[in-house]
Image 1 (tube, one colour):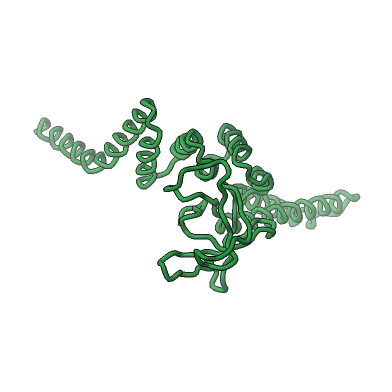
Image 2 (spheres, helix red, strand yellow):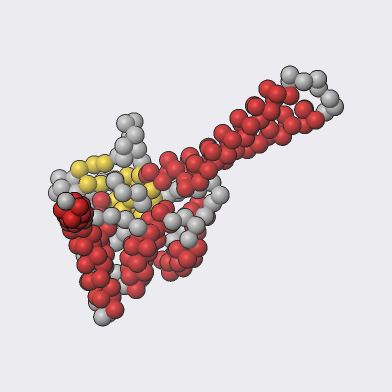
Length: 273
């Protein structure tokens, strides 16, 4: 009876593994195929396989691998995109930040984009600012509730209140700045050359005056440049459907100096839609 019970448990165990392993095995196989393709020098094949893996799941190392491969093909725009995604998943990783700086330099991207990413008020730190504000606020409130039940002595309570209020204001301001960057991150896209085009160091992405293929260029930006989609009253990106089926989006640089329409194939959002 005991042997049958053990066999029953083993059967359940292998049944459970069978149910969950198929996708894992498929993902592992794709990963090893990508590694072999990269080792053999077939960078484009490795990019194709890694891109398939991202459809099943995301990780910082996966996006970093893709970024490095795109860097080898001199597709700096997509290299920037995937280093950004890697940093969002693993913000403390200094290697990703250093590599991103190098890619920005090679791509000729705007330096203010990089400053925003490494800022102490970056979107990734929004929760930290909020937690710090909550802790300081409630600790101070608890201290004051205890202090004012006792006889006040000297200027210590007033000094504490002044410091507490200043800390709350500073942390609240930090949270506001971080939230502002978080809101921008929701709208941020990376300008890219169409993947079907041969990458050239002089190629840039045109921001058109009007939403249409025949429109003149209002300005041009380098691949890898951060742009921010304009939003309508409904909070969604402003989009125009062209007669040929193209979708056009109105975007601008962070400073607002560069503005114009670009096709959906000419950008990718930093956050997955």
